[in-house]
Length: 163
Image (tube, rainbow, N blue to C red; front, side):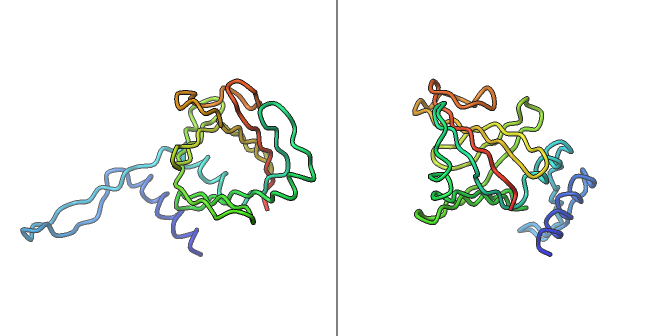
């Protein structure tokens, strides 16, 4: 039910555009708080990421990680309606961060606001997602240029399945 209200709010903000709500300023005068509109392309991609995703395959720096190791890691990403992502692994503390998408880029870009920020490109097809993460130590490496794992700059390609 919570996701319904959050999506309703986001859609309402998008459709409303310049609408806002009123509150009182410190002097008692009404002031208008304007909701920032959401671009339709971002809303579409935001919705397609929502939910829990389990990593089912990994290529690290251009080399496949053995399937039994991937299963043992049990890495998962959960994207919430509040633009929050939870990255979980049973053997490590959960990472929680906000995320942004750029649906106008090709491939689509995803930024996870950790320290340092995680830059990635992705595509969703049905219940599968391919997510290529920039893991190079060079802070100026930018985003991966495609959905492929490479040794230089170092990128990891994750294949995820919706749970």
